[in-house]
Image 1 (cartoon, rainbow, N blue to C red):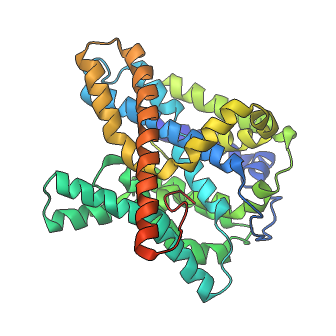
Image 2: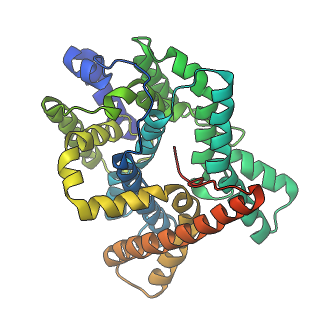
Length: 359
């Protein structure tokens, strides 16, 4: 049913010209201007995404490790509800990457990614290798395959996308750019081409990243497109209708649901920003999204196990675990971020702020 939930909207998009125009952002223009300053709305989006990741992993903990959560309809719905998370991260990554115009900028780009993302990832993999007493071979395999912990595949996929970025940035002005990469992501998802020798491949998620690249100017200088809200709302409704028709566990390649929610949040952007309390708190979470991503999973498993052993009702347990795991993950992430920044400052004798944040 998950494949059908992708194929039915695909047919509607490809057959109806108006749908195709909106979905592939035909009116977008690639101007490649640089971001003038930090836009907190993207932090808000990343905050929502990391909250959704934790929500998904609470579902994972119950579906995999508890008798009352295994294939439970409530757990499946909660999982599927939050599956916009990874699309949000990849779209934001594509939007927020600055244009590269020469070799020096390319070197600076990769240097920043090493400090901000891949060094924290390496340190976490080393910690797992030490705790689990892994051999050197096991450590390097887990490092390269993103298998030190369940969510780490994402970092390997992100690395592949960053390696492809210079080539993709050249091709993104082509009018068929988004359509071609949509078909590639759709095919690899349906065909199950997700790994090679256990190493996750980026093709499943390539469309989200390319969507961010192609539409970056539209989102950076966003002007409300209220007339499109019914199209995106229809995709969300269709997603839920197909999901409830035959309920099963969905995974991360939500080619329609993820894009629809992303665009709807921009359409309602002013209303969201005006709710300062919620907006500011979720934005703060988004600013710590990488360390939360790297550290939260084992916290979720541990807290869920405690409440399960205490025989707390599944429905109550689900939300209790989510809230407690979120708060604890945020506190641990902030503490680790401070230690990491201080170590970098000490070793390199100069301030290097914000290294552990997603692009």
